[in-house]
Length: 150
Picture 1: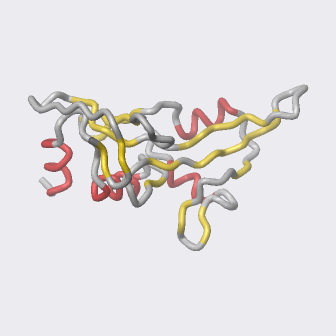
Picture 2: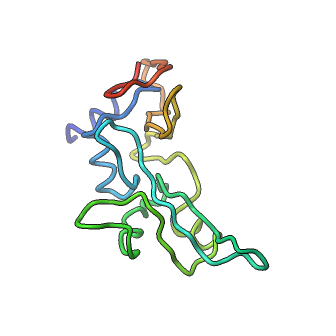
C-alpha cells in the first residue's frame, strides 16, 4: 500500500489533512484548491439567471464527492497561468445541472475514509479533516492560527 494511503488510514479522526494529503486529493479531483496554510479554497461558479430575477444560480465549489473538480478547470477564468483561481466563472448550467455534475456536499469518501470540511474559530475558510472511520484515535481542535490548527 502506498505511503499516502497509510497516512490517511493512520490519521486520527478529527485531524486536519496535511498539505501532502491535500495535494494528492487535489490531483484526484476531490478538492478544488488549498492555501499555503492548508485550508481549502473554492471557486464560485455562476450559472443561468433565475427566471424573473437579476440573480444567477450559484455553486461554490470546494470539494466534489464525484471527483469532478478537475472538470471546472476548463471554464474560462478558472485557471490562470496554471494557478487555480478563487474568482467566479460563468457557465450556462442551472443549479441542478451544476449539482449533478459536481455534487453538493461538504464531505466525500475515498478508499473507505470519509473527509469533510470544518471551520475553526477565527477561520474564514474551512480545513479538510478526517471524519471516519474511527481508528481508535481522535483529536479535538478548537482554534486555527496562521500556519496551523490547535
